[in-house]
Image 1 (spheres, each protein chain N blue to C red):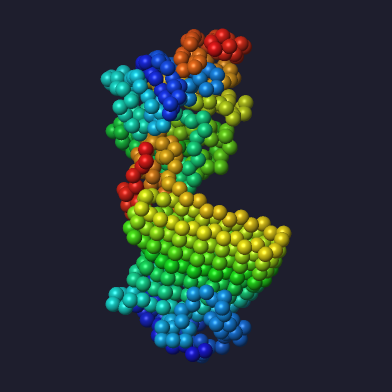
Image 2: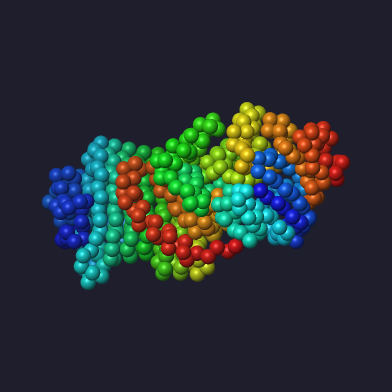
Length: 250
Length: 347
């Protein structure tokens, strides 16, 4: 689904990712772990096309097996999103006055239009969005709330999860979606991810905590230190990190 | 009081096709000022106010350009009224109209007053006297070039709520005097400025009665070569006043210009007061966030501008104005789209 080759990323004059390589296939769940400032969030931002990063290398992506790989660096953030790449932000911005429902409805229809599928009118979309809220066990207040405005940290994360459920992305990049969530909410998050996971999509998680990984059980765990992936392993690597920290790779 | 009256249907086009003022419901043209037995207190107040030095920018009172048109709205004790007026001029040869309205709200009454400056050039003055426990709600929408003034006297535990929406060029003056204890005033304004529109706002909110409560919140969206100036002053002359004031601008063009002056004068202790002003361009990170959900830059900006404006509208809290606000929504949308087209994102 996505092949990242020789990726170098700078923020201003500071080099953050240095010759990073990573491959993710449909149906896989990956976890990226690493100390603060190692470049985990920057990797996600580079994939979605953050305007403040300078990126070189290749990020090859296709959202289905019958398509050709294309280098995302030639595409705008909007096009990347329309192609099925979704990032749940660690700190989602607040957009006062913009109603969540209108925002998501517009977003959903933009994706539908891009893929040539039928758009939904307000009534249809309301029913669809409410079914997603029910699936996640979320309050209907999310629908008409101004976009992230005044929500607690945990509520913002739930709203990101809700958006993910509505948009059904091919590649989901979840940046510390579990931080700020209480224990019950982490369980809800894990259950939701399990429900959303299928053979056509892939999920990449950044997390500092073992709790979410214990529930989701990723197929691959990567340790990212100083802009490099230092080690890749299975779920047992996450257990090792949980017990010993990152000293071994520093 | 010698007032010469001529009420013209062209100018005062009342709600729907109604062409006659319903005199038996407390509405009178200025000509009836001498013929109707208004309470002495109101007549004294009119006389005092028009000649008062507090009355900052009145039309010349005793010369040929004195306003000769307008209405008197008398809302009797515990009554509730709702009135809508469209200032519409069919004769475009007339350069400007001067209109003066008076509002007398007796104890415990309430009035919802909606006025719409549809075209041409108007100069209006609204003089409002709000007795104990009465509530005056005002919604003004300007789509033309107009000059408008509100002068309000608030008595004990009375309230003044105002929402001004400017979609053209105007000069607006709001004077609120909280004379007695426990009065409340909430003033909100929204400016949509484009091309060479110019908006000038002067607001004075004076707290003379203790335990007064006031809020002032103005938002302006400027594109092209538009100009904006808001001078908003809160003068606190009484204890236990609670007052907040905020002036905010969203700038969409490097050629637009704004000058805001939030002013606060505190002459007593034991008060709570804030004032401030902000000016900025749309937040690129908010636009980027929406981009990552497949929403184009143009649509994202449209969301931002509309959302920014709707914060003011949604908090107006006047249910009775909702229908009127829905009517202006189709006017706002093309304006927003035009502003978006002319705005170039900086990244």
